[in-house]
Amino acid sequence: MAELDIHQIPVLSDNYVYLARCRATGMTAVVDPAVAAPVLAEAARLGWTITHILNTHHHGDHVGGNREIMAATGCTVVGPRADRARIPGISVEVDEGDVYRLGECEAKVFFVPGHTSGHIAYWFEESDALFCGDTLFALGCGRLFEGTPEQMWRSLSKLRVLPPETRVFCAHEYTQANARFALSVDAGNSALRSRAAEIDALRAEGRPTVPSTLGSERATNPFLRADDPALAEALGLAGRDPVSVFTEVRHRKDVF
Ligand code: ZN
Ligand code: FE
Image (tube, helix red, strand yellow):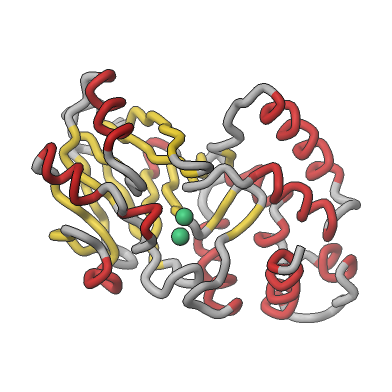
């Protein structure tokens, strides 16, 4: 089994940057470095040598550390082909269906537009790890800056069929606010109510709520449940198609 060791680094006000190291080869990727200094310091502390940067999309809080980490380590930048013009230092372009190899660890690449037009996600199946940037959040999804609700629903539909034990390594700690919103549209969901209580307890101790698991997201994240008749009914949209329900949930979150 080619497995990753994953280390989570909280930076800025609510971003998570990840160091992912192939246990067999020691090759180490930084996923979405918002900034450089804390990432370089953590890698040094762990004794991990950064060889790659994996970017999910072009936003500054995901690529802001690219240049400085490249300069410090000589690492290779991997990112979405569709966004190559907006990813600083990119030299390896990946797209839907590609298999990217970090040492002996394989990631399947998904094209998941919606938050941005070129967003991708990396799924390391053997490590049960999904790096999904700002597409899927714990109990939420990214804002639609460059895409339509239909695109985002299709993108999330690709991710939600992954195995339930998949760990969701999203790029922000937004979970507590997301839980408050989720309860406002899906108060009858008992799994959601108990998860919200767990999240409050974790945050009260200053602990991360990320990663979550896809199984938990499927049961509690309203953005993954737009085809659930109970959610449609709760929103007054009984019988409507999933894209209409998703559009309404996203709109309500935008104005929440
Ligand atoms: Zn973003
Ligand atoms: Fe972000």
